[in-house]
Structures are given as structure tokens and as C-alpha cells.
Length: 96
Figure 1: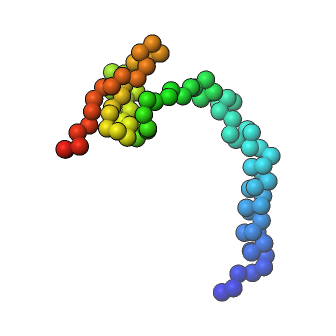
Figure 2 (figure 1 turned 45 degrees about the horizontal axis):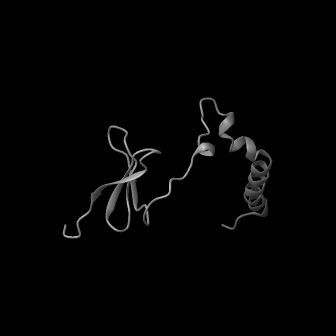
Figure 3 (figure 1 turned 135 degrees about the vertical axis):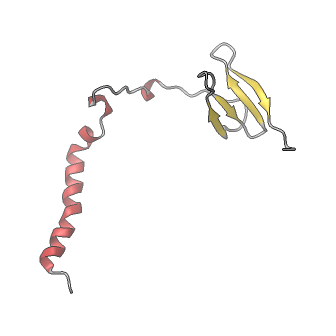
């Protein structure tokens, strides 16, 4: 059964109307500051340079310490704060 022109126009109009609504209301749709209980912490986040290539992975332990990162040369580094920086925590073995 062929689709009638009327149904086709209604189906084609939906994405256009949705795009127009998103265009005009995008700031209120994508505004975490306006939601109760949210915290916009990424603006104050900083990057910590690594003494190697990576990280290949990033983890925290169950006590909340870390982060621990694995770098490409097999070392596992632990962040010890601003004063100490990254320290070598472990080495992965190539003979596993």
C-alpha cells in the first residue's frame, strides 16, 4: 500500500519541528547549572602531565587513593599529590 502524500508530509515535518525546537531551547536543555543539585566541576579541573606515554588505563583503589595509571613502557604510576607528583608504584612483567 503506497504512503499517502499527507502522511509523508507529516512524517517529514517531525524532524524539522524537532530541530527548530532544539535550536531555540538548546541552552535550557543542555544547562546543568539550572538543574537542582548539580555541580559543574569540570571548569575547575586540571590536567596532570605524566612522565611517560599514556595513560593506557586509569584506576582508583578501594580506599580512594590514586589515581593509578599504566603507561606504555609497563610502569604503573600512582599520583601522590602536588608535592610528590607521580611515583612508580609497580612494573608489569613481559613474562606473564
